[in-house]
Image 1 (cartoon, rainbow, N blue to C red):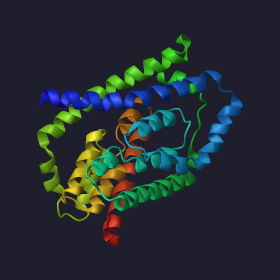
Image 2: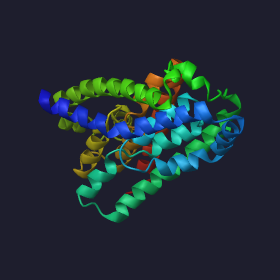
Image 3: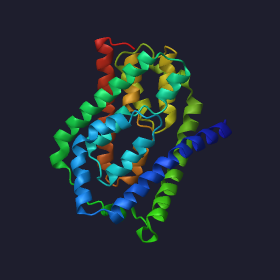
Amino acid sequence: MIIDVISDSLIDGVKLLPFLFLTYLAMEYLEHKAGEKMQEAIRRSGKGGPAIGGILGLFPQCGFSAAASNLYAGRIITLGTLMAIYLSTSDEMLPIMISENVGIGMIVKILALKVAVAMAAGFIIDAVFRKQEKHMQIGHICEQHHCHCEEGIWKSALHHTVEIFLYILLISFVLNLVIELIGEEVLGSLLLNRPVIGELIAGLVGLIPNCAASVMITQLYLRGVISAGAMMAGLFAGSGVGVLVLLRVNDNRKENLRIILLLYVIGVAAGILLEWTGITF
């Protein structure tokens, strides 16, 4: 069992390496090369960020959510864009459904619903919080996260990537071990035939910062263990390791907790609404 847990943790971590490195490389480049005009252009593009984020989040795996966490920590994207990416991210849901020969119509409905909710939530959040946000200069990324800027953008990006990779690897090992010990069936028994409570619990499972959460939620739904509302609540609240990266790179702990709570509330509310409306896939 330990060998399997270690193997799964390594696989989850290695999948993220390209996303992490390219993200840090882009951030270092902006920090060293971009002038005031580039910074202003990035901020202006943030107005349409939730729409772009909602679409990008559809890509399988949780690399975009991890990248978004880094970009938000540097205030390169808005809170609404971050939330849109988190909400639309399906992590391993799409590969699992494809491998299980789920109908294309069902998959399209789920993805369309995720994008619609993600975009709507993102734009509303930006409209409410935009005036309250205190934008940082891109150059502050270096000071905030103690990068080795004098070593050049490649070495500095590599330093960040290795640091976050090891952090994710450690936490993933602990989470995979816990999931292995508890088992999917036990979690399923907690969710079966429990209106509202099922969505609340599924949302908590979705918050687990690990790719295993989306796999578990998707498989439980396909096996008929949980309802469509519970599945969507878990998938909305799940952002892969995005939240884990956010906790590591964003120094404002209170803000991190508010973001996680907001993600959970939106995900559970959307799942409950879906259940009440009787929409099926």
